[in-house]
Image (cartoon, rainbow, N blue to C red; front, side, top):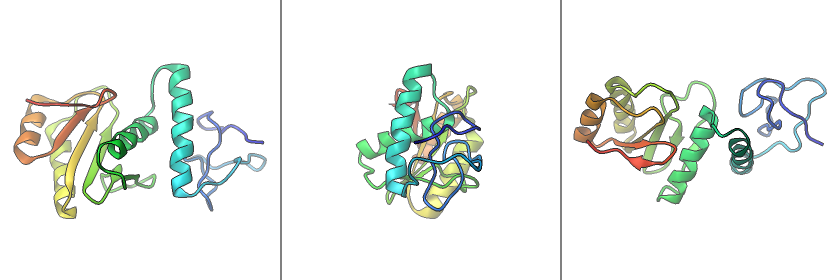
Length: 164
């Protein structure tokens, strides 16, 4: 028997050894129980199922769902070992793999040059390819800077590579 999270209203999903909802971070209440606490791999699979169900029901996605969709895209496109970073302070990274690091911005306004530069610096210090996903698009200056420095920019939800 599973229950719904009182913070986000979704099915309560927790990580093994944790008492927090993986979607909103709210602690579960005394009588709330998750059906199964999940390992990292099982958690990604379960979150994917919940995301698909909620996106179909309401027609829009949250920032957590955007990150999961980008993770799925990366796994299908050559980054098989990609995984989400932990909630909270992630050091500017949302998805990491052996070859690349990705930042996901699910905002209405376009991403500016400072966000691209910050992510580029993080990727360079890790020695990995910089990927950037944005639902709100990019400013012209950000795209020009990204192209000249090798940051690959994608527009979500369609995952089309943005070129100047």
